[in-house]
Image (cartoon, rainbow, N blue to C red):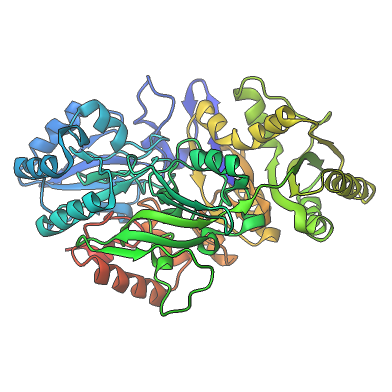
Length: 540
C-alpha cells in the first residue's frame, strides 16, 4: 500500500496541485477533501454554488430543497471529467414510499433521523458524503426482495451498505439514494465441522465470524484490519484480499456459494456448499467483486480452514527493497506450506506509526529502510519455530536481513501487528492524505514510490506498505500502474472514486461487456449507481 501524506507547514497543507480543495478545509477538522474526495456543486445558468463536504447537514438540505430548475452535480477531484450528474430518470423519495417501507419493515427499521443518516451518508474516512434521507434495515432476504421490487418499480436508486469501511465511496450515496443497510442480517445459519463450510447472512461482522469459528477449531480465510466493523457481505461484494491472501487465496476461491437479490426483487439461490459443481455458468463470480451493482448479497457460504496450533510471527528489518523481494522468494521456497503472511512497510510508514500511535515501538534495535512481517501457521510448534529460525539465520548470513525478532508470546505478536494494521489510523491522525489501492508485479512495487518521491520532492511524504506476497501497494498515478500491467484497484473496488478510471486496467471490449451485464441484470440502473462502471455509459 502506498500513501501520499502532505506535510504540515505553519498549519497549512502544502500541495499546489490541490490548493483549491485544500482551501475548503474548515478549521475544526484536520481532514481535508482529497483528490479522491468530492464537493457538492449545484449549477444553474452559468452560476456555480459550492458547499464543502463538512458543511452543516441542514444547510445542505436547504440547498437541495431550492434546486428548482438547477441540475445537481457532484465533482470528484478538480477535473471536470470527474463531474457526476444525478440521473434525472431516478425518482425522488415521497411520503408514500416511506409509508410503504414502514408497512413491510416496521417503523423502527425505517430511519429518517438526521443524526443517524449523517453517519450513514459519510464514509469512515470522511472523504465521501451523500444526502440520502432514508435508511432501511431489512431483517431477512424476503424484506430485501420486497424493498428492491418496489424501488425498481418506482425507479428509486439504492445503495447497499454494510460496515461502511471502504475507501472508494462504494458504500455511501452519491446523491439521495435510499440506503439499504444489512447489519440486522447477522445470523450464522450453519457450520459443518467435517467440511469446514460456514453459511451465514451478509451482515455478519468478520471478527464475530472469526470468534465463532475459533470455538469450533477453525479460522476464516480472510483477515482484515477493519475486521471489527466490516461485514462479510461487503467483503464478498468487493472481493477483499486481506492479510492472508498468500496462504488462502482470494474470495473467488473460498466462497462456495451465495444468495443475492437482483434489482427487480428476484432472489438468486446460489448458496451451494460443494467444492465441485460444474453445472453450467458459475454465476456467483458475477457478484463477488461487483460492489452491489448487480445485486445485493444476502447470504454466503465460505470454506474455512482448520485452526493450526502453531503460529509464529517475525518482525524483520531490510536495507533495500531488492532484499525484500529476494526474502519473499526465499520464504516461499523455505517456509512453503507454513507461510501465511508476508507484509512490508517502509521507514516512512514506521515513523508515522511511532509518532502518532500511543504505546507503539520499533521491535528491532536499529532503524532501517524497510520492515517485513512474516507469519507462519502450522501444526508442529517445535518444527515450525525451528524452521522459521533457520530461515532467518540463513537470510541474515546472506545479507537479506539486517535485524529481526520473533514474537515470544501473543502480546508481542499483537504489538507487531499493531504496527502494520495501525498505519491507516496513524495517517488519519497525521492529517490529509491521498490513498490509492493498486496492485503491481512485485518487482515494480517500490519503483512507484521512488518515482513519486522524485516528482513531489518536499511537497509530500510518500509511504509504501502492503501485502507484498500478492503484489499489493497503495498510490500514484494510474498511468504508471497501467504501463506496468498493474491494477488500479487491488482489493477495495472501484466505487465512485475510480469508476471512470477503469480503462487503465480493463480493455474497452471488456468494459462494454460489463456494461451489457449491468443493463441485463439492472435495466433501470438503480443498484449502487455512479459506481464501478464509467458514468458516460449511463448518462441519460
